[in-house]
Length: 88
Image 1 (tube, one colour):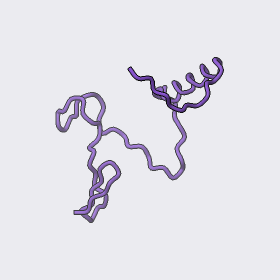
Image 2 (cartoon, helix red, strand yellow):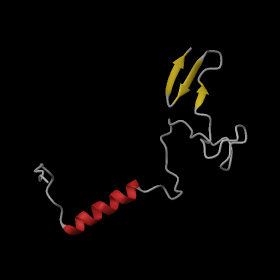
Image 3 (cartoon, helix red, strand yellow):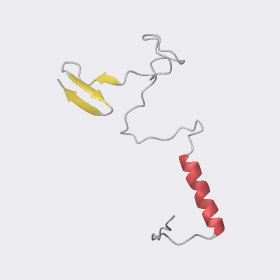
Image 4 (tube, helix red, strand yellow):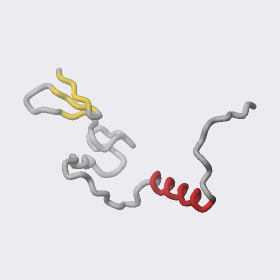
């Protein structure tokens, strides 16, 4: 096995390294129900269309809680999917 000699930042003292790793773990951990403040211009979060694990319209188990494709404009043929809009 070849040893890689790559440049890296200098090592932190042990206590600072522990603190750094703990902060990284906290930042990557899922939220514990805390509400985060969104920017005033941010769109409202989408609410699920149903509760539970089974979609009452399709009978799908474990699927998405909302229809992923949505109508962008009422009068036009624009559809959005994951933030991209398609014009038919």
